[in-house]
Image (cartoon, rainbow, N blue to C red; front, top):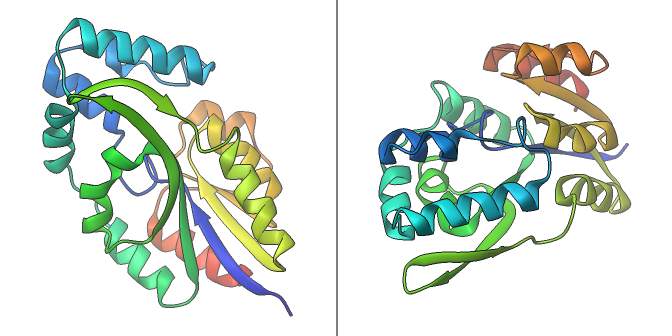
Length: 200
């Protein structure tokens, strides 16, 4: 029988949405725009970087905002319980320079994500680790003979969920739940933990 491994999205599943928190703290509502409004990720990131530069928002200012965030209520206990049963990898479209304060609070699970290009504390670009990295990571784990169980909350998680042996939606908005009825949807960590545990 294959060993199991779990892959989880970060923002919206375990932590608040970072860009929305930054939008609220900086008073720049345009930063609330996500892949739900702009599915072209490159276009969205260029828009964000240009906006930050225009308003003089530095990386350290963003890190200060992130440092004040906490994981979603119940996320730490859920992750602790899950990691006591199975190895867990966080697959996220966030950036190394953003994730660290939240990873510390989550007790440093393995994280696969992207990287920002920074010059003198100003975000000047970004480097994707690879295109569609969540699905690619799941596929690679399966090639290592793992049985993969995945959970996410947004459009950019659905290729990961489809590739996994078992995919679940967690804290997903209603339009995504309706559009992807093939993925069981949960809004409580206890229910998600139980569903995942049954598939181990």
